[in-house]
Amino acid sequence: MTTDPTPSGGGWQPKLVALDIDGTLLRWDDSDEGPGASVEEIAPAVRNAVRRVVDAGVEVVLASGRSPYDMTRVADLLELHVSGAEPLWVVAANGAVVFRYPPVEVVHEETFDARESVAAALERHPEAIVAVEERGVGYRMNRPFPPGELTGEHTIVDVAELVGEPVTRVIIRDPQASVDDFVQLAQDLGLAGTQYVVGWTAWLDLMPVGVNKASGLSHVCEALGVSSSDVLAIGDGRNDIEMLGWAGRGVAMGQAVEVVREAADATTGTVDDDGAAQEITRWF
Image (cartoon, rainbow, N blue to C red; front, top):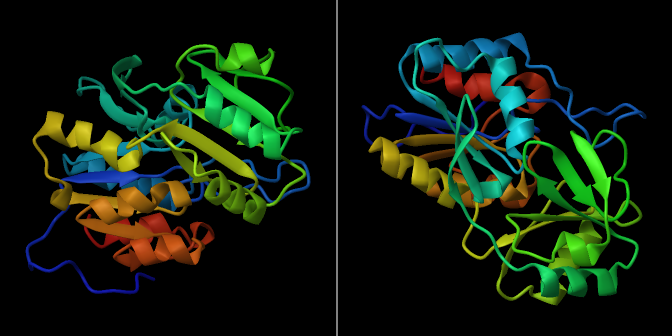
């Protein structure tokens, strides 16, 4: 259940709904075979709630740390695209890539030189896995990721080749470390010139400075003539903090950690309780 009243101004209604994916639309896989991965199924209550938004003529924008390839599959699961309608807007790679779909047409992209940041992280965690997206194909990485965590084709290359040219995002993952280890790592390194997000475990996303889901969504809003004050945003992770604070109404999922809930205007139910549907149903 959502824990606060509606936004000030009695007639407020979302003109754009921005939705995180993992932990918001998709449940986490807690089985031994898939810890850390998401179950690629949309709960009926969530699908129906999102469809009501679309049927009301309001833009639904998926905003995730996922690659574009991973996000188109979720858009298809939600059946977001209506025949004859304009292509969807999607914010991928924590805001570094903004594209339309279908088909995938990148309209904005931010890249950066990740060499120094990656070297600093590997100095502290020399056994960490490093990966960058190979758009439309999968990922290039220095060694295999745990099963189920990254989709698409995986190509093994050395780190120097991975970050030898500007990239949109770098993933650093150490299965032997904890989320607290990586929070401390990011704080200690400072990572000057680089934006970072610590994920649900020992997972660090490195992006260009100033790039996050809110910056990506700002590009969408500008194109659509919508203000951030008109946006309803729902998410559960540390990479949602800027988006939840930027939106007119930012709502944290019930299982979100405290720092994410503090950034939001409200807290809804957990992903297992279809919290996204609970919030959307307040408006549609």
